[in-house]
Length: 243
Image (cartoon, rainbow, N blue to C red; front, side, top):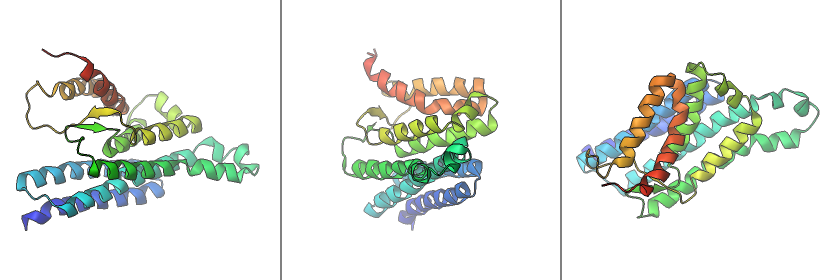
């Protein structure tokens, strides 16, 4: 019985991602974002339960990747699709003057995200060098980069965030960059650890020490800083010689 628990939790990840897609298509991006965050929690818990119960399986490994494609690839891509099609371009004269083909091409830009997520997960499953660190942006981090914008926009008071979510150019660049980051070989921190000592977890503690003040100062609007800080700390930490 216990061997099925991790797979059940993974299924909750998948279910959360699918429901997030439904809410995103219906225009409720905030609820969709919270559902993606719930999927992240289930994604963490399925691995934790598998380790605690020693219930590893090949099916669980493949199911986890399939769930992640939906929750951290498709769902955030739909959110970006809604943001892009909600910009002024699709209600202004540029669109109504008949540039339908160009508009369709712009709408399809978020397609790159689930494709890159699937490629990232496929490579991760056969790459034995990513046990203690990642190469390329993890799919949950990709999703967090998207939902943090929605959370910051909805709950924060910054005037900068609405400018980001309302700018077609920024949204396109943002979508392409975070999608391509998933398939790069840039070394990034793995947040999984076997102990809580500072030595060996330097980057993780530095990241935590930066995120907590950011959230304390800016509230939920500070969530938009999490992924940039994660990337910066991942790149800088290996360059520091710890004693």
